[in-house]
Image 1 (cartoon, rainbow, N blue to C red):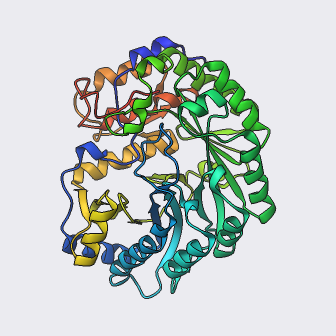
Image 2: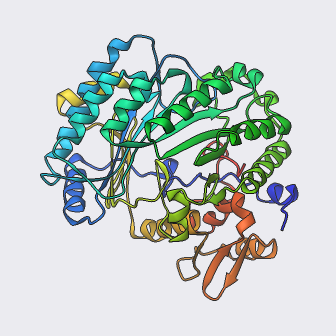
Image 3: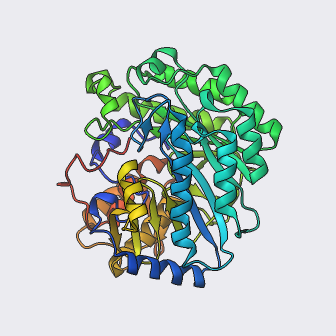
Length: 446
């Protein structure tokens, strides 16, 4: 079945990306430190799946104007040692309530540019964090890397520490687009890091690729993917660029007039899906592709795929701890997010104050809706039962009529080729979303 642009127009309502439920704009306030650490202690004691650990390293030498992540632009590498000390100090807070030898199911370094840090400082940080911990079987730590700011010494050091996956921010390979987003990295640099990682022994290489960037045509996206396929990454995250200049001020370098039209974005997304699938990749959840032998594909086959703030993963940890500025942690109680400013985070840390600036406590309804949204985002189906939010009957019938979903027995099943509408399907269950939702809160399906 081929979906046309009229359906994209019909379902143009702005909806959350559903990296969490509830989405961040609907959070109801951070938990107290006492309640938070009590939930961490209880979850860790009862967990059979270990914990996921995320560390945010915010520093970058150059500003990539498309980026909406929390970052600090500097060429002063003297900031590395104090920030490592901060992360270790925050981890010690958690170690007081964790088992003597906590089991780590996932470890991910994000940013920023994690490879802003020297090989020796990465070694110092990871060694300190993993001291007196154990790794669950079949785990492989992962790190986001910038092809222009990554060395063999760093990759070897990380490999020796247990890292087995890297994610390269490719975004676009067109020189004009790269100039506009201030991320100059020729194909040869991407190829060099990819081949280097594989020679060292890394088991999985992911590329992040964007469509919808300023002055990016359908033909340019097609050419980008053709180049990327020459390197045969194990996984690909193929995202639509989110233009939020009120959040990411660097995006003010260009305006909406410089961006592709919604029709071009749709055509680029569909063309990319076809290119990857024709090259032997499998569609995973939403916006992701993986080779059949990659663990992400295997997890999808086994209905073991999971999704959290770090993206799609084959590990399903019951507890996620985020360290560093802006990091988000997740427990059975809810969510808690650290201060987003390095200086504020550090001051609170050494005053012994709460680091949180945002958070949410789950209600019973949250837990029900959250499970259904995870089912849709990860497994493309969910039971059709009383949890279906009241008043969504019209949207449900429209989705069925447009062949985006089907009702099979007591299940809602998403059409394999309708993955771009997953977020609209999820909104069936989300009581916070209506067609009157503020456009500034969320982004469109593409």
